[in-house]
Amino acid sequence: MTDALLLLLCVPAGGALGAVFFGGLWWTVRRGLASGHPALWFMASLMLRLAITLSGFYLVGGGQWQRLILCLLGFIAARLVVERLTRASGQGAGGSATEAGNAP
Image: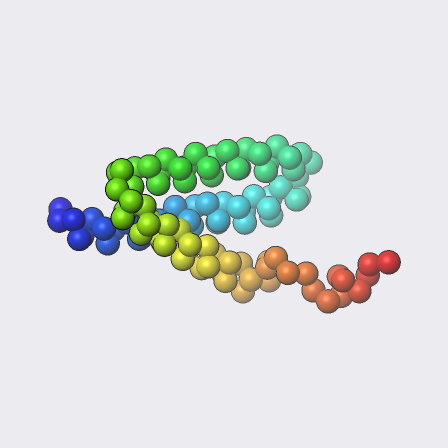
């Protein structure tokens, strides 16, 4: 493979890593809050997501900073996509005005 093609493949690889990381985070929050042991869900998910993401960055990067930067761009793009998709389904992070109005 040529270097340019290999560099171009780093962006979708970073996107896939970001989708796994942030999609897994979204899934964990949904499952963990309904669980009887949320701390176990959150800690196990964090360890698994970090292991997958760091291993992926290590493999994709191959010791070249250019690959790591492009992988990071894909990772950040995936974060934006997952954020937008989860907000579209009504599961966004921001609370509604009715929730804030219930505070003493």
